[in-house]
Structures are given as C-alpha cells and as structure tokens.
Amino acid sequence: MNIDATSVQNLEIIDPFHSALLGTSNKKRSLFHMLKTTKTIGGTRLLRANLLQPLKDIKTINARLDCLDELMNNEQLFFALCQVLRKFPKETGN
Image 1: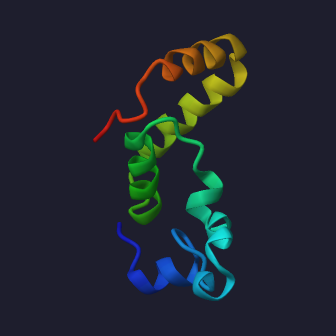
Image 2 (image 1 turned 180 degrees about the horizontal axis):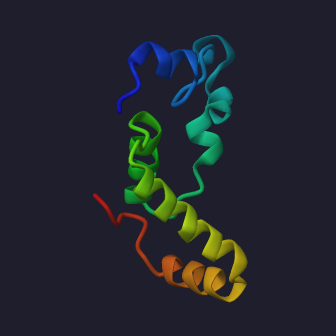
C-alpha cells in the first residue's frame, strides 16, 4: 500500500505542512522526525519507507508486534541489542 503525495503532505508525515512559514526548526514536528531515533542511515531509510508504504500483511505486522513485545518485556535482551547496534557504523545501509 502506498500513501498518495497529498496525504503525505496533509498528514505531515515527512515534513510539516507550514515548514516554509515557520522555518527549519519546525521540521522536528513531522511524524518522521518525531519517530526518528534510528542509529544508521539504513534504519532512517527503512523508517521513511515504512511510513510512506505502510504494511498491510497481517502476519508481518503481528511478527513485528511480537518482536516489540519481546524487547519490551526482556530488558536484558533490549540493552544487549542496543549495545550491539552501537557498534554498527552510522553509514550502514548506503
């Protein structure tokens, strides 16, 4: 599923609607910039792609929710994964 350009603009998914009027500091108010806590360029690209082309396959959605549930309920796994991700170069995914 793809979101059309008008909806992307109206929903302020990537850029705020009035960014030209309010300056660049307002850029952090888009959904993309509020959610962007990625550690790599590849992660940033994947987040953007997922916002512009949301999943519709219920099995994939449920698998991702299960992964999130595991990370939220297993603090040791979460922090171990964070440590591993810190070792990846920021440029990963170019």
